[in-house]
Amino acid sequence: MADLRVCIDQIDSELVALLAERERYTDRAPDLKAREGIAARAPSRVDAVLANVRDKALASGLDPELAQAMWRIMIETVIAREERVIGKAGVDG
Image 1: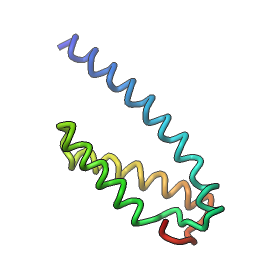
Image 2 (image 1 turned 120 degrees about the vertical axis):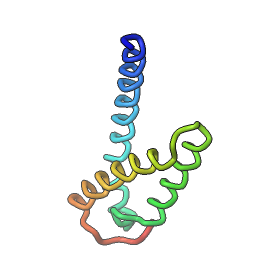
Image 3 (image 1 turned 90 degrees about the vertical axis):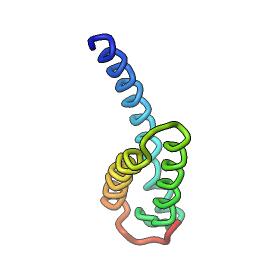
């Protein structure tokens, strides 16, 4: 069990590093969205991201419902942060 936990902990470290990198990219979005008139909540983009995650999860053997649930949390957190910066106005982009 100890060896298994070491492997899981290593993967967790790698996931956190990748999620931190993802967050740095999403932190750039409010300025770009404001300049382009895109709303923080862009439903077509949310749908596309969730569909992409579902497809990648299925192809990788990951439970697609789990993957989508995790991404929904990330997406909603990012949108809330963006709305605090740029408000709710804009087009679906």
